Length: 180
Image 1: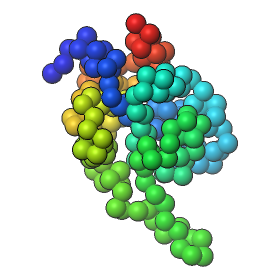
Image 2: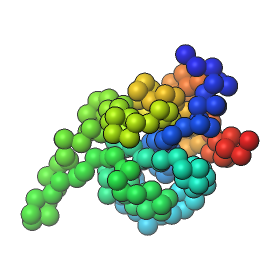
Image 3: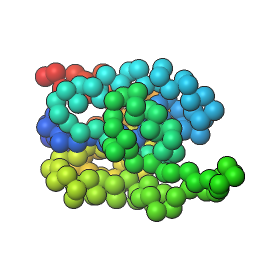
Image 4: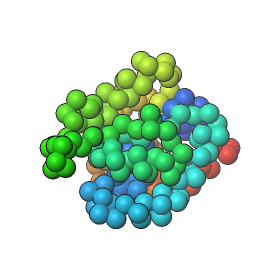
């Protein structure tokens, strides 16, 4: 177990930071956003944190159990390349009818966020990966993530609030950590 001060040091020296999307990077759940995708710009305006991390050459990833089409739109607003997006792909028949989702994506199965982080460590040899999110599936991704930061700025999930070593309700706190 790492202490809160050790967790702060890990965040400051991270090679990569992975964000959950629904209720973390965007204020609502992705299915709600699908109906009003044009409103995403407002929902991510507070993400100064992402640009600060990128200025420090920290790789930023979006890992979501939501839909890739929405997450890619959010990523583009944050200048996160599509290769750094891990989410579920929707499938359609040639006639345009919904055919389900791509079950081969790691985010389509239980423990998928942890599988993505393990893959990132193997592929890029990251030494320190931080996972930030609002839900239990985000918290479960640590380990293999080296640390988890709970986020309750949009939705407070009591289990996460009670069990996260570091729980924040505003990304300004993390921006401040990078300036110290």
